[in-house]
Image 1: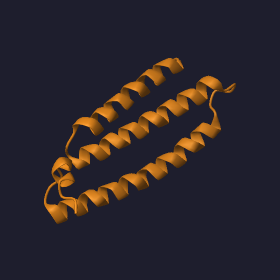
Image 2 (image 1 turned 45 degrees about the vertical axis):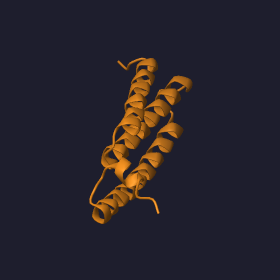
Image 3 (image 1 turned 45 degrees about the horizontal axis):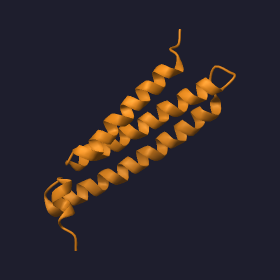
Image 4 (image 1 turned 180 degrees about the vertical axis):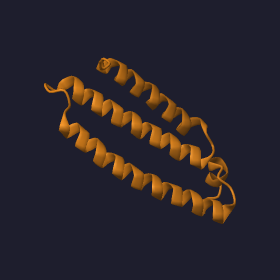
Amino acid sequence: MALHPGWYITTSIILFAIGVYCLAVKRNMIKIVIGLEIITSAMHLNFIAMGYALSLVAFNPLTQVIVVISTGLGACVATVALMYVINAYRHYGSLDARRLRRLRW
């Protein structure tokens, strides 16, 4: 027995709030990237729940395909972001975003 889509949307809102908290409060760049990925997961869950709630069939294949493609693109974005984090650590020796913000040219 599947849960009502409202539960999934509520979970998506909670995940989104956790991701925004990570972006707003955390200073470590790795935690900021994780916060972005949590927001992306919340968006995917919300998209699937809305596709399920608004479709006439049990599973909407269009929303699933869009989420799968978006997951692949999100993995690429996370990889590039983590490459920047690694390069910043090698160059400056720190992952503190506030400290690195002061190093503008």
